[in-house]
Length: 583
Image (cartoon, rainbow, N blue to C red; front, top):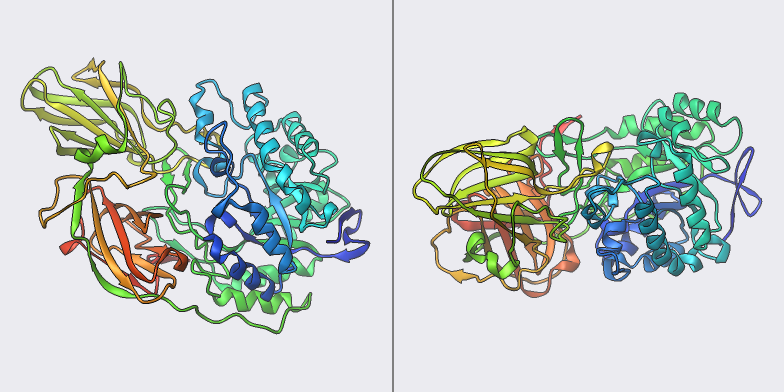
């Protein structure tokens, strides 16, 4: 592969002028059997490069455990990009934002109450250096200096929006170099944060989605010479629960792209193909109010969540053709889909009764956080015996993020972090009644100072003004559902419950799980965690990658936290429902 050179008048590739035409494609948001398809379509739109973040939290789920297999086989993804003739911009963090759980920072970092993320805290830097020592050696042969596709590597991510410690950035750059990265480095920031996030001697790039000429002029003012690169050209946006589905018209977005390319600048679309926040991996924002991101990361991108070209694909391809050659081949307008209108979920198991099979309790004088329980995602089930009967005021200092409260197994209320809710009243029927609090981690904050986002019940718990000082805290990570004691019968369990059913498939193809009438929870197909659903919308379906299905009998499991859909039925349809549109 050719080498990227950073010159005073622009990029060069082996001495020849070069414009980066790139698109975001996160391997960890796409089923690995579909990587080749998505990369091929990137080239067909006229791109010569793809960009990907690297999620530290998935690759290193525990301090002494590192994964680079299956859907995390980054070397394979890079090899597939090279086989397609694509270069790669690699963004390994340690922090990535990306509307991803905790911005990609592992939850186990927060088990240390003194941990200062994205800083020169020695414990944080030691963890980062260890991460790089595991991640980077297998990638060395994929660097352009060794014939691989990786042209350049990013240092941190939009650091200027968080801090201004140049020495921290310098440590990261030196760590990358120490572990074998010898291709050009770059930083990226929004225009107002360029100087805070810049690193002397490293290419500074800008992120924006409109007013390209104005923002590139600001970048040129800050950097009088060198290449101009928009590392995140925002051509769509992400959705949050309780809002509308955000779209950006193809005509407007392509006009902005034309304006950018007319300046001679390079570009990376954010996103070319967004993919999905499978499982529990969505992030959240917290600007005085906590706002979790939805499961879909469709992003109104040129390829939709199922990898089909949208109107933007053709519009962007037409603009790119004004500045660079594009292939004559076009992708199919739509891939085949699987549909089955009715699947009955005939088996069930109450979550509270199933809890002993899903996690072991820990007794303590206060509720323990997820991080103290060495748990990353999912739920924590807290229980305490109440000493007295009568009216009760329950006060929870911090709910992270949504607490369902039960008394002797019967639901008495819900407290949501998003609504700044902390108190609940009920009547205790007898001394010794059991208070149960099921707390859901709805996604750690991925942007800003709120990234120190510990989960569960934080702080004190008071009942009628007095502390409750004997608790059991039971982690429910739901990494496997093999031990859920399902039973048959039409009786619907009280409160949260798992529901299971089977269906026949005559072929494997992408589809969308629709949960009409269901309220809130999570879903799995053949053990593959699809993500969260919530009737508040906007998203009302879950993407099911074709490779997840089997020819023959398949299984679907739904964890419903409140009330199941009518007749406990779900549907698989060939089209998604991402909700009402917000322009």
